[in-house]
Amino acid sequence: MKKIFLILLAFSSLICFSCSKKSAEVKMGTNAAFPPFEWIEGKDVVGFDITFSELIAKDYGKELKVVDMSFDGLIAALQAGSVDFIASGMTATDERRKSVDFSEPYYSSKQTIIVRADDNSVSSVSDLKEKSIGVQAGTTGEIYATEDIEGSKVKSFKTVIDAALALKNGAIESIIVDELPAKEIVKRNSELKIVDDDFFTDEYAIAVKKGNAELLNSINKTIQTIKANGVYQKMIDSYMPVDGEVKILKAADLQ
Image 1 (tube, helix red, strand yellow):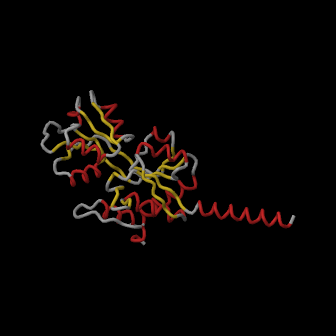
Image 2 (cartoon, helix red, strand yellow):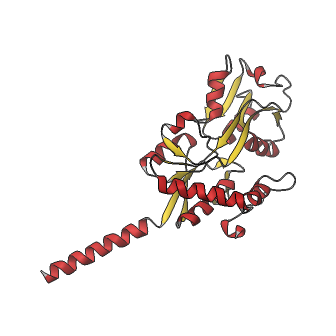
Image 3 (tube, helix red, strand yellow):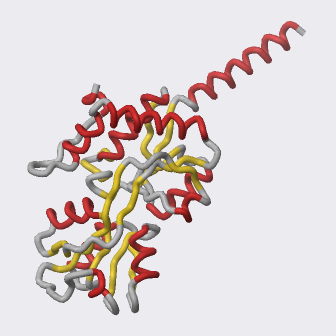
């Protein structure tokens, strides 16, 4: 009996060790093709949401693991437990709230239009009627283009970078995308330009699995803390500078 007890004790200790090892990290799901919020630099995924997620993980007492996947697969991955939260410039819509719980908003972004630099036929969203429009699959831009633009011919892409390539090649006539990624795309592609027309605004938030109140409360506390202590503004200044180059930050840079 003593030997059996020792074996069971050792086995339970091993299980506990494995559980503690497994829970030492928190997994963040993202789509790393949405600069300046997330993109791939060398072999690393970097960006505003990555730095933000490092701070979230630190406050939650975990190590961050970034999981890069298609945007339209993020919510399914969260529901399946493949990731613990989503930070990917995701808008907290009523439809998505049916599937996930959202944090407080952490960024407001307006939607914008990209066309080829030599195209003067589009000066507002109303000019997109009957035109082909590129969007990222699963985004609010896709919903808007499909439901609110009369006669639109919507083509969905895995990333907005793929959509930009299609626009340059003449496969589509325009793109609807969030303002900051639009600016990054145009900065890197002189053949494209932004149409100055604000037609709706998104509120980005962090998504967690329904009912995960512990993680959600921790994330909301992190949002409140970084906005109060000036860290949030440092991140804005680094990733969204009015002038100059984007500066990549690590959470350790903000201590």
